[in-house]
Image 1 (cartoon, rainbow, N blue to C red):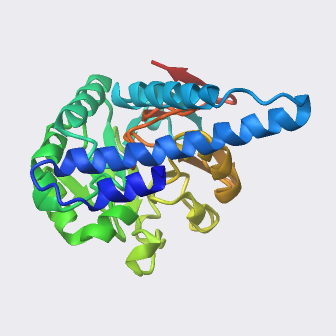
Image 2 (tube, one colour):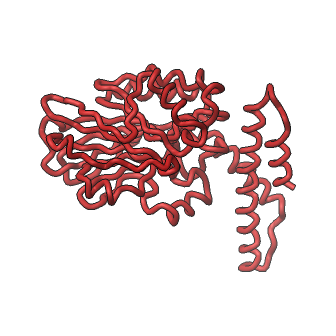
Image 3 (cartoon, rainbow, N blue to C red):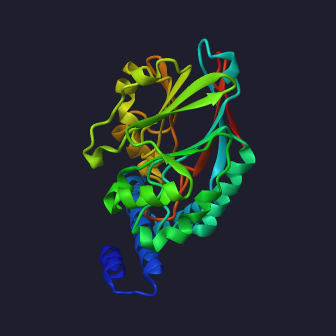
Length: 322
């Protein structure tokens, strides 16, 4: 019945209430997920104890989970400060700061006010560069141009760099690239740019998402002089190839860390690098769990995040939640 409700909401031709229609359809999806999970838990408890809990318990837990997840997702991202230890780091790059946002999904559920909140938090960090690692826009560009406009107010020492994710390609990546270029971000699809910081060169390069069917360019020979090389890749799975190409740090997203239970468990079986800081050979990889949310505006077991990465000479990795 709830499945039919989801289909009804999604297919009914609300034109003036399009965003509300999509939002309700997504919330029905989350409601159905929690309902199935708690029904299974109830049945397992019945097999173990021999007592069947009232079905009302399932509905209560479902509603509570949905409300908690909605509040957690709606209040916006936290800032996670990640110190990335680099062997023989050029002393001029100690303290170099990178703000990363990923999977913002500006569209039917993520609106202008949410984007303004993200931009305000990033600007307060006073970082050297901002990187946007895909799925920033999710939908028809013409409908969400105003919602994504605050991205043009991002401030950093050397600028903002963008690569599209799979969702931009689903909706026309070229249009999203044009809009984001007009907002001041630098397109790095199979391109690289040298950032000069206190006499040291930092390469910031990017590759397209696999759905684009473009061959990723991991050639860094043109930037052999760079003291530090950063790759922006929406999906983390390219990491072994990136490490072989000589990158020191890869920044990715895509996984949402599962976004809400039980997908927070499932995602770990689908993606080897599903969240956080990982070491792949001589390279570090950081997987942002998403600055926004896809589908249901629900986060349960995860939190939307802005990542502030700082290059350090250190033997320890420190995570600080601001």
